[in-house]
Length: 120
Length: 108
Image 1 (cartoon, rainbow over the protein chains, first blue to last red):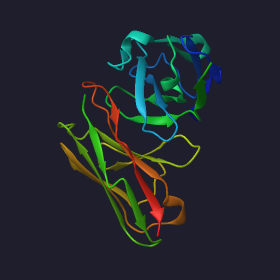
Image 2: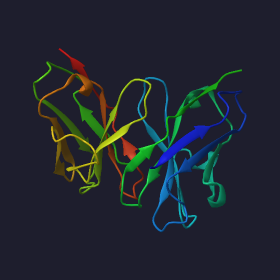
Image 3: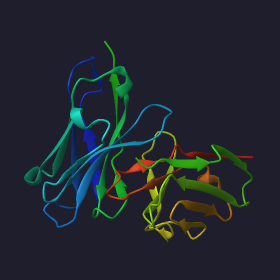
């Protein structure tokens, strides 16, 4: 049974760096093809894909946010971490992590999401 | 970036009736198209992938069709639990993944 759960601060100040953790079970990021992605959704708005990391450490980033994002993994702990630098109120959103079977598949399992508010 | 445009933005349908939702891609995505259902306060749930394949556990009343740039999600006989937001997504590796704005399916 695949599960994912996001954790991290619920409130950050403008210009701060956000660090989110995705802790998962039911699969290993050692498995060929697998990936974990990050997606966010501002309140009442559309989903926005942010980043992906694959089993072989290949990483992909949103072109519009690339300079502010870093995604890493700790396979031994079944965790994927996302950092977002220079947070702005426009980054207020629910942040989701999700499982991807291969680079040719959609996100089939999602975490419950964590709401991050950016405010001074 | 591939822009995914969904129509209509909202749709009112009576229970038991059919609902047809559309998604258009600004350039071809072949069959790399997924549909998700999202209810308030919940994460998206995968319904359809590869444009027409139902995900595990998805009822047969959900069906997808299309290829290239034009896609359709059909719900054949709406149940009360189907009223939600439906979101399409292309998952080509390049250009990067993008999602549609969603269609809100409401009870008439």
